[in-house]
Length: 55
Image 1 (cartoon, rainbow, N blue to C red):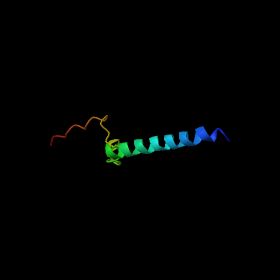
Image 2 (cartoon, one colour):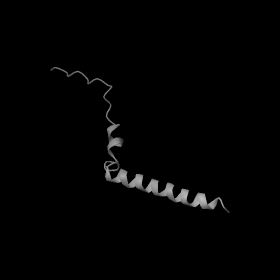
Image 3 (cartoon, helix red, strand yellow):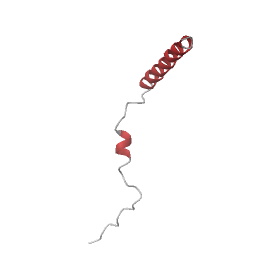
Image 4 (cartoon, helix red, strand yellow):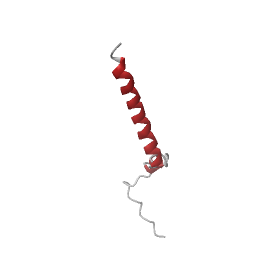
């Protein structure tokens, strides 16, 4: 039971650290553009454009 004297404050400290890190990431804008990376992967820039046909 004596180990709880160390584990409970340690668990609270780790939880508080995680909460502070999450709030910091919200404030710094990490979650502003959730769909940007999903849309950015779609264009295929590796394929060269087809040559324009002349009439």
